[in-house]
Length: 372
Image 1 (cartoon, helix red, strand yellow):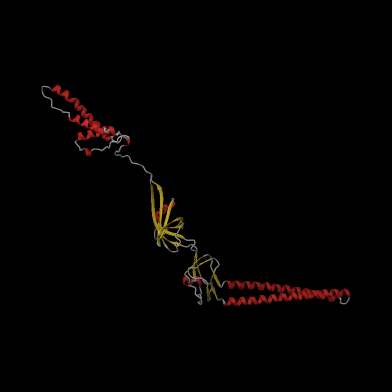
Image 2: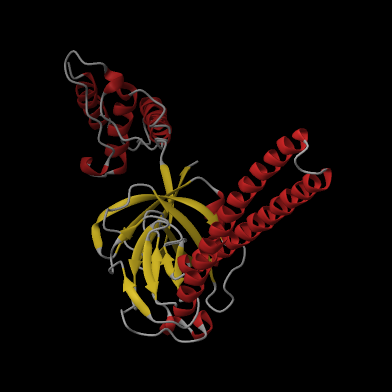
């Protein structure tokens, strides 16, 4: 049932039938009575239509539609210029009919504040290995790229002086052992002589003085044995020192990691000065690739974003199609005055397996906040 449309036609016909004639001189009073009420009715309709137009969003459609049609007829506008209302389909609720709405719909949204930075993959645990002193390299046990455990032999040096000292300590230790064994034999012999002298004294064959002399001789042998044992202890200490010097001729891995920048070569003699002369005198570099971090620079004006709950994502330049999540560990306490940047350190969560130190990386930091 299209009630608004039917009502519009009836209203239009009524207005078209209104004819306002000028009053004649003979019938002035009758003409005034005839035209007064139609003018009042038309004025009422105009005012009502204007009010309905201004309050069109607050009126039900079935009431607002006749006033819109009347406004269009009186103002002489085309029907296409008037607000268009769609009547509800048969059986449908008139309230749910389509009509223009100016009321904004508030939808919760998430506003993302995002910034980017660039940095590099860094290995916080690494060591550049140098020779302890100038010496000839006799063995290199590793190759570049090898993964080693802590304590693994890396390079061996000749160490002539250490070898001579070790050999000398071994000889001295062996001699001390023989001396101790000899004194033990002498003590055993002295004990037997003393026992025999005591038996002969009881028979009256030897004198008391001879018995006492055997007792003194035994104490001398015991003292000599004690001295030999002390000498043996000293030689054992010297031998351990020599062995320690020999062990220092083998350079071992201070921690588990991967060998990089291998410079050691069998037959060359290391330069004097070691680490003081720079990286060119180093033997190799050991890097713990199992513990990598990312350090990136950001414009210092964006430091406030790190005080909020952020989501950080990284992409390696070598693997642009493999983004991965990282976690913020710390923000540097000092900004760079030259570059106007602030550094931040991140810990990879699920990085690509082939991530290596010194790889370039791009960082995207996103802050999630509820838009009000």
